[in-house]
Length: 115
Length: 514
Image (tube, rainbow over all chains, first blue to last red; front, side, top):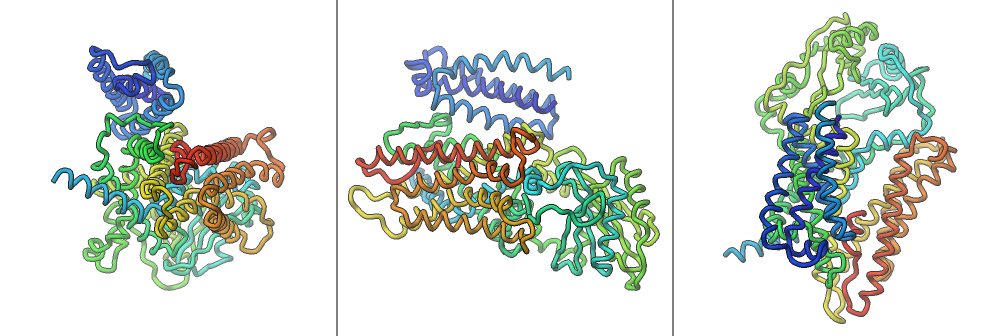
């Protein structure tokens, strides 16, 4: 079920990169207005990195050590590009899109696991 | 010292990138297209339809054809039909130094197919590492460029001051053109950095035995075939005796090979078919995995008995095979392939934006005239960045427009490729700098948009009636539309930049599409 695993990777990485981008003042200003609230920077960065690592873990668990990392790297680039495209053209969509990607990943995980 | 180091790296990055940039752009574009080599080949031979073919029967038909063509060949190679290439491919040669002859046979009759003469996706694939030059020269040149690309990648990472802070930064409306181009260059370069490093390194490893043959030469002293046998890449083979003889029937050999591995081979190699002791090697599709290693079984061609099997590859061989495998990504399903394609496009975009950035950063300020060097780089940039993609569209159009019966038709298609490339480059050079980019981009976009239309008119097949080439047609339309949008933006950029005397160029996202 490789396409589903790639989709799972993409959604986790996208949510992770979204959190990281919104922890930077420049992008926070474009997407939501104003600076990043002081207490948010650290949790958002930790959460972002955790999601990206979770995506790697999922890729390795589902596809093994040979295909997993290769697919993960592909998904990493695709997700990051999507974040940059949203920030350039529709910055206000970034947060809702990243928040939507999370449950999508949560939904995909059991489906992929069982198939 | 620190400052000095970073500055010297910036200098190294700018100049190493410029020197190899034009070739690298062509290598990236054709390499990226090669992820869809089979699909391109199939589109370029619209006469062929998928058929069910039995390998044993295909092998018999191929051998009958090859016996009539060159009974005393040094070798024959038979490729069995597969869904993406539904024909029997036959190759024959008198010496390993070439020339290599080939033909496509109809699996149902064994006669040469009626399909148009074309190199298909193989031309783009070979261009990717041979640049249409004599193979060894081209491979050396591409290897040298790849080596410099590694230097440019590493020095680029060192030069890039704020990878994390600028990770997502792409200022579309940056106040200075240079800033916008730098953002585009950084985004395309950094977001796909793992891919860029991987593809450059594995690409070099793929051709490493050619670049560094001395180890094998010294250890095996003229018997280099033995290296491949001992490394587990090739089976032990019978030695020809030099007397004429005859080949055992091929169908039982195919059946025995199939029984042994559990699936039909993808091809058969026959060495010294006219000898009293010929060799028949069954070559199988690589098993599912990253490594690019094909299982092989050698048969004694006189008796049909199994002579040997390719041994188990050990760590070094597997490492190299995995690198080749990752580079070619045969293992990738459609989604992952699309992501790799995207990464390849970003590689091309990194090179293209880097080349343009070089000129933008050196654009004369105020009323000063551009120097000869800068003008030359600007002209070469356009000729490559727009000319190369336009040439591929020209190649596809030639495939549909050239008469089917034309002598040397495949060569004419390649001629059209270079013709369109040269034409775009020369026209671009002749036009004033402010109109060059929009006009050339519009021309390239029009060529891509014309591909599905011309194809529908000449073959009678179009996306509304036959979905066989739906993906190909949609890709052409998307590329064409992207180039037209880029032309529009390049034109607008000029209109707004004329007063402030900014240097020519498009905005960043267009190069991402180019």
